[in-house]
Length: 348
Image (cartoon, rainbow, N blue to C red; front, side, top):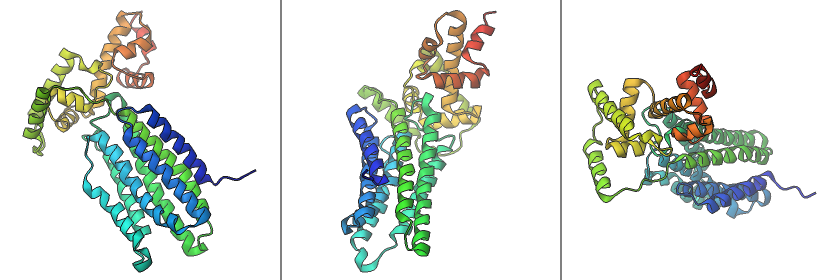
């Protein structure tokens, strides 16, 4: 039987995943497709590099590796705030490219640079996922928890990659690189698929773009421009004013019933900057926007459970949830009961 090196198996699976995303062609999956295609190419080059050891593969391997954390960061940054990518993120891959190009002449420290790159972006992703007032603005509020978990997984995988680089350095210094191919194979078999899953998860959690009129867009942009430079801590009165506006919006328009509601959508409808909404809710309630909006949804679900005979599946859809797992989790958080138990206890 022909033995296929593990990197090629992983590359094949990632390639199939990339093709499936390309065929699906949803609004928010192009960045995930690019990332998975990059992972596929990187894994293929790694396999070729350690199977045939051609100079061309040695040249491209660090360049492709340097693009992975940057691309992963962009996928998650785009979930926090659309089009947030900045040019300076391209500097590390450019430096690695130049270093690979001139390696025969001065042998730049590419391996330590790649390790530092993965550690930096890994730590940045994990830190971003734990900032209470910095929840992903573009993600559906019902998917916030899963999106943050995906961000942490991605950060952890980047840190794991840095550990793999460290293990390779130790192997080359102590054992002349005898175990390098095995370390790389196992690392890529775990690292890149997990990263790919995390990126797909965040991409599918992003709400579709709103269709807006020119006047709406102009008004919202004006509000953003007027308040984007307000960096001082909100007073309790300012926070309460914002919360009252949000409560009025949620109560009167029942916008919480929109399953695609995100912090960005809520901010646009309220014409209040997203960060101010997030900060005000956290300041006054000690919870995030997702939890507060889901509490409105749970109240609607409770009413339907008591007053109708609708099946629970229909009730969670009518309350603004997209999945039963999210509904059950939030219902238990708010009421400390399951929906079925709540219905039984309130009908006796």
